[in-house]
Length: 397
View (cartoon, rainbow, N blue to C red):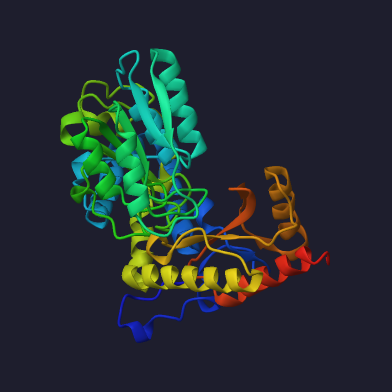
């Protein structure tokens, strides 16, 4: 499908089913889990293939002359979208890898501590535990309120946890299990005032939220572009503040070592970086539909769907509307299980028998589902989910 030219709004197809054909998704199921891996438009996949073909036609020329200029062009195109300077943007495969690069390069003193939350992404928490175990540091986890209705309680709990002062604070811009949009600007400011380094894991934020890294008082910020920016899988970035660029290195030390932050991250050996090289095509896709239009549609649909599901099940949402982006969590009706094993079984049943893909977790003594809203979704898909869960809660297949 050709992406429509970025003209007036009247020339852009309505969101929902009219744009479903722009994606490679199977046509007969409700994909309510864009947040996990994204969904890449077919036009972006085609551009990715062009980059792969360029590599294969003349591998040496491509790697010597075209590879790194292509990465820098992608970073330059991304920079104004996230409020960051291109010289601080390293193109990487995913946010977890970026977090590993930062944490495994730190010199933490024995007895120091890393502050995370109880909703920190599990892979990131594992990295923090690993790094702390190797240098005699400790990891402390702040308990975030859930369900959460506003930012005040979050900030109060966070500020209290800054005593004793941690060496490093890791903040999720959007929590993965509960889809809370945290007040990272205020949290980062408080952490820096306490003397801590700040790493923001913005895996879900680019494309979902209006992002201005320059306004955040952080030392590192990482985000995925293959979730809410429509990039191909394996496209992410790590932004590093100027004062840390000389000491922040990729996990793979290669030919660029000691040549500077960008050279080190751009060249870690032979690899297929077509997902990163095709990022400009993904950004053009966003422009065609309007970045603000996309963000507004997704946020409004996520909130509408969350309210619909909570009303249908007579349950509650995991957060107030002010803390919600393009995802939301809703408590499932009682009687569907009381463990993560039950949650996994229910999720599999929804995929296999109802053709609905949605994450389900056991949290706070109940089963909760996390819905995503993207431009190919419409409200009928959430109504389908509401009906399927009601049938199962009533003991019907």
